Amino acid sequence: MNLLNKVAIVTGGGTGIGRATSIALAGRGANVVVNYSRSKSDADETVQWINRNGGHALAIQADVSHDVEIRDMVEQIVQQFGTIDLLVNNASITSHIPFDDLDAATDDVWDHLFDVNVKGMFHCARAVATYMKKSKQGAIVNLGSIAGLTGLGSSLPYAVSKAAVHALTKSLARALAPDIRVNCVVPGAVATRWWAGREEQMKKLAPNLLLQRISAPEDIAQLICAALEQEAMTGQIITVDSGQTL
Image (tube, rainbow, N blue to C red; front, side):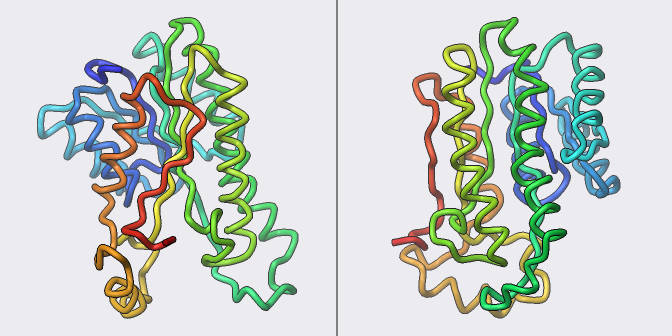
């Protein structure tokens, strides 16, 4: 799929991988909606950067865990652009909990992570699917994590939520074929603000990776764009982790 003039939503699009993806899509000529929940200043900064550099972007606030907010956002976008062609389900949260502290993995933690990381992606996919089916073309990329493959990560509920994202991808690919392709990009360690306060840990990790480098957000963004463009692929879980899981 040629991304020129396509209408794209990037959830959590103002920071980290989301910001890099918003910029990469705009660079390919897409009209980009930078979704945010709380990071308004980051989203506005991303939009301003894109528009200043010849792209076309706008920011819209919506909490992906609230279905009604997602439906309202999608309606706004369709009213302005006429359709939606691309969705990058990037918005995610975590909770840092030691794996052996099972009591700390409370129902509230489980519910919050699944509401955003899993149900939020489903809400977004369901809301855009109607319009993608009308045009008989569409592409969705979900952001997973190697935590969902290895069972390791910032917390046990986070790892399980990302494993659920991988399964959601395959189920949506079946449900939305043949008009809509759904794939999942699975990053390893990425140099984003998620490492805030743990920079030394990140520096120690890099030499132990096969490629001896931590991925940059731009590395992930390139693969996301490639997955959106690739018309012969759906239901795939694609890992980009500098060899971390080998």
